[in-house]
Length: 78
Image (cartoon, rainbow, N blue to C red):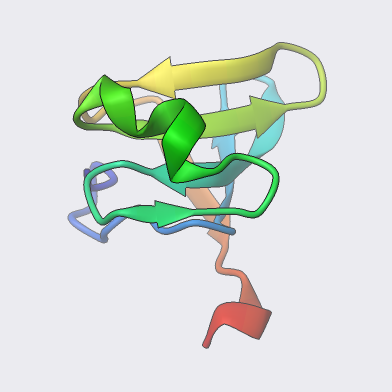
């Protein structure tokens, strides 16, 4: 899955959605999963990304949402 600007969504990305800022915890599209959200629990979704937001909790995005905006990449993943 990509952001509206074409950049690929990656695990660890901090992003903004509406008035909340969250972290990408798994990308089914790229087969990347954080330790807290393993493939065995989320791989069945088949595609998309899962984002953890402080206010909203976990939200699953199956396709690009124009309201998702990258705030920062996880520098430890570089």
